[in-house]
Length: 132
Image 1 (tube, rainbow, N blue to C red):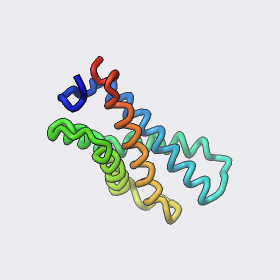
Image 2: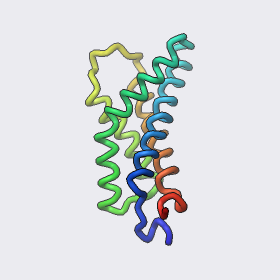
Image 3: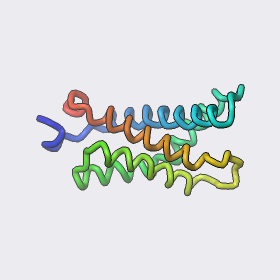
Image 4: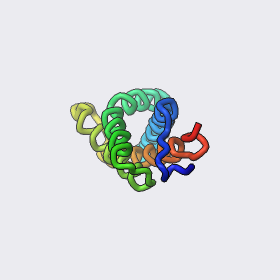
């Protein structure tokens, strides 16, 4: 059986894939900040904080993405990559804008969301993982 025939990933695979996607999205944002702003000694602290914030504020959009994917049988790469970018926008709408951020932070969050969506699709919909 292939994924196109209707096999959906189990909850454990969905949760694990989300965790890895959060780590990758945070890594993309923190690395991009380090490149644009400069290397900062508190980079590891920013990464840990970014993972925690991304996990919490990205979860509503992620749950919506999984539900839409299951209801409409959307399993394509484009869907999950675009959904990841849109989840970045949703996360920024939920997150407090009063916190000081660099000017390009919004675009870096979208970039991180795109990367996270790509990684989620890569991990969650691998045939040998979804069928087990």
